[in-house]
Length: 369
Image 1 (cartoon, rainbow, N blue to C red):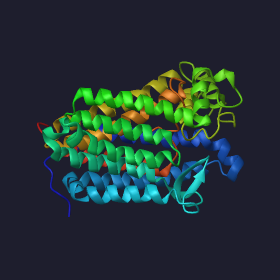
Image 2: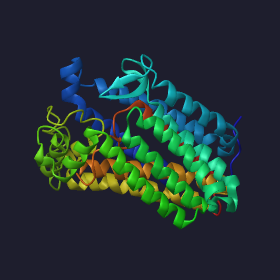
Image 3: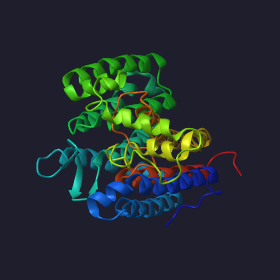
Image 4: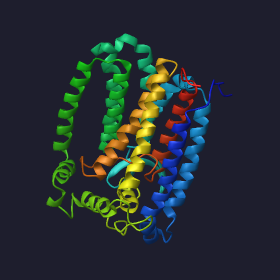
């Protein structure tokens, strides 16, 4: 059933992932305990669900680490088709579930999936498949560069209808990394960057809430009880942590000052409780994971493996940069989870599935014993 491979997986990737996952489960409980007790009468409400999602994700990671990644080439068109179908269905009134102003979920009550999370991984698989066959054609604007870009932008267009700017940024970032890894011309990539900047400005101008996020990013204290509230509370949390933190479980901001602290802003609670050293240790683990991911891409036995590893690692790197940037007030709020640490079943299971694919590629890497 499983393809035979020549060696063990990259243990650094595996252990860095498991350590981050363990920290995430602990921090989800710590960050959500007050909110869980208030809403559900159970301080472990979110933590128990995160453990279940983590167990499912680890199972998927193990399975994908054993299935030869080359099989994904046959699945690529179907994965892409399914992702577009889900992105369309979630927009249908009465079918998609609206949470916090974004119609981005399918399911019932607390049990649901976020199609955009599935779309990120499915698109990376398909684009790696497409670009692996493109060869030098990727240097042609019309025949190699634009087709995969248009596919990614179509997905982004559907996701923006939810609306979800954060997932759109991650998909665009991962696509750019894939195109660069495939050998696209730098001039085309710079042109894409310029076009993206203009498109971002237009999207911000079209939606007042996005403009509010920009102004709150530049000066959150201009509206401390409105658009700047989350950023200010996040900075309070990080500032309170100091060098060593207030101690695990001793966050003050989780006492309903920082809304939904177990999701996009869990890193702020981590910094408050574990201090600068704890926050830096987590970033170091992410840096190691990104390094080993791109190393796996460089050592992959074929072009498809290189692009697939680069795309999965790109998703991870972009999400970490965007999430930490938002939490530290360095970039405008976009609503992106922190991989392995933030609460959320779709994000966690799909990211662990991606790591499983990375592990399988590393097992077949060239020049590694």
